[in-house]
Image (cartoon, rainbow, N blue to C red; front, side, top):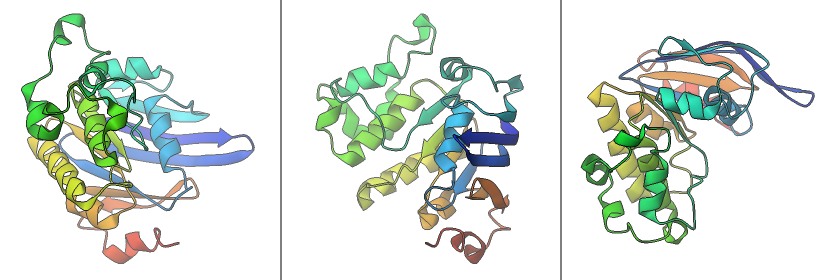
Length: 232
């Protein structure tokens, strides 16, 4: 579904991504892991077009997207749940969800699928509340729901468990597993919480100092080979 080859990116004089290769397959969850500051979020923002790449290639569903704007990537079926959620605090829950449909043709953006409220039932009861009034965990559920209403073929999740209470982490894990098992969507999960990623991921990619230092299927990656790149 998504293939990146030889991605390089710079921030001033810093070489932040170094010849990164990445594959994200349909019907599978790929976990991107690494310590803080190693380039994980930079990579995700490059894949979504929020940041430009200096060199390399990015293909999505057979399309060369390396120079496409974020909204054109979204129209192809890519969605992004950024670190920190970035919901619209002054808009209601319902308005936030409808914002996720901005990339869809008008005829498809007229109503929210009931499945969204089956996945996140708490949102159904909060449609008229402002997004900024929700708890951190509820805002994370809202951010994921906003991405899903666009009917994506790929969803990119940046640290979805950060600052979230354990009960809602379980709800988010349930939703990601359901999406993966459905088989029609590719998932790229950026995460530092190894046990959460291990419960969901079919494949691991580990970054250190902007380059891939380990990758492989879940059955090939033992705990120690991943954890040693996460320890501070």
